[in-house]
Image (cartoon, rainbow, N blue to C red; front, side, top):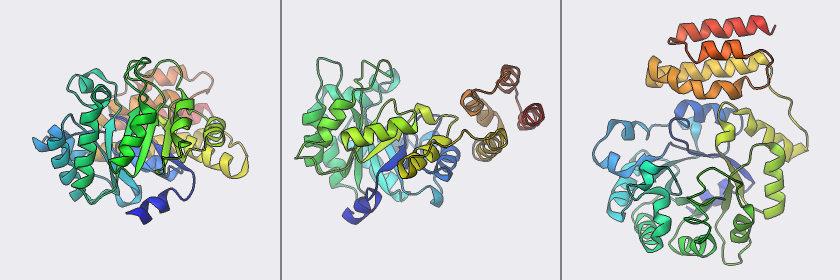
Length: 325
């Protein structure tokens, strides 16, 4: 287990954040092809697995070229999360990731995700029990605290490490902040530079460019960055970050031909995995970023967000290619 962690973090990593209805196997494979070092499934409800919920079970699927990959679980008690971790382990991911940071109401209202920032003893007990009952490395993703009056991350990081986790991802906001305001990376850096912390620390929040990724790496000495919303419709961000870190060179934006090829590949894979209707609906959130900064693109965007078949989307892509030729 230690060799596996040492191998992953032998260099600075750029990870794709788990995002519901975004980071399915199709999008993860796209991001891997552009340089993502580490990917995570969409978060999987422990109770959903235990109830044999079809949606939860489908999220356990991944392809070999996605490795290293973690299955991210959320829940509110040790018994269900231990049982879910055992089920997830059978899918043979590289690690299990516990979500103690999701601020979404439907998750928090069930006592999962960031809700556990209000019950640290329970969070630690869950972590200990999952670590004790799985052969896979266990990662944790969490936030700074519930709100600005209860910032707990510096002490919490030590407790989670002592509970046996192998790596920690910190989103630099509180639960109450959701995704508003600016992420506080000084606290992420404080955790990483705590002499007691020996596990890898990944920083998350507001990294939306290669320059920002390098700044966080150099300033705080973290072991990696996690890219979330900035990757939606923009898998090229991984390539850009890698190139900038390796050579200091800025990658030029992708040509329209590459954008169209990637979008078609993504959609075709999603149609194959999820069916035409759902794939087309979920793909709509990607278009604005895929075709960002193209002049006069609005006419095509309106067509894309109303197209209701794969063939219709392909026809629109042909129009786009011809228009920007």
